[in-house]
Image (tube, rainbow, N blue to C red):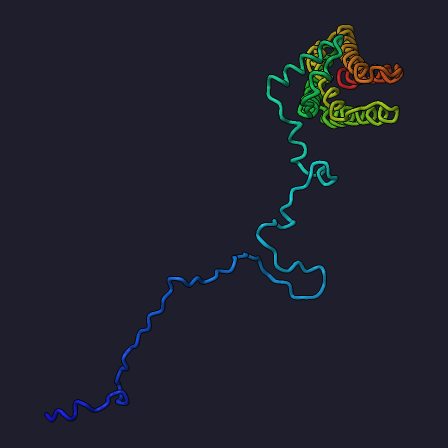
Length: 272
């Protein structure tokens, strides 16, 4: 083959690949600026109107996840606001229940000052409701069989409704009324402490209800009056220590007789 054909240019021929020319660039002293990253959430602001928040950086949490302060009025309807009032163990509850049997000391508020609880109010009141409903029916059965063994007897479900309305209403509304009264009279009162104290004052009625089943009328009255006086003294003496320095004897007398009236109501309605 003739060597003259080897010197023809081939860059225009079909399928030919041009030679790759590489250029070396010195990057030893060249720095590429890197913009600062700023992560953003979408959607962006579509313009107009102050209600559109536009871009939001990840540093600020959305408003929906902001925690409400317990002191805010919305905290009243939040369950988490009341968890601190149930932070008690069995030993603390038993100790406070035993303290309600000794009214002379009047130091119940000093014992619960650091940690007043609502567990006693709810648990003691609920226990007393079921005890009165069940033992009240049992007492009427024994009294009826004691007087006339041939008479028929039926369980009175209405005892549950009366017991729930009376006990819950008393344990919640009476401390609430004294709270507003003492606030009006210029005394620094605490509603949670009052609820706690009145709740534990009902413990003695749970124990006395078991003795009221005995079908002896005179003994029943002695038991309920002794329990009522003990519970009334417990409430009055602790209120006295709370309002010490103020001449509010009428308030203490009212609290005493209200507690005694509850005891008489328990005897007259559930253990007739």
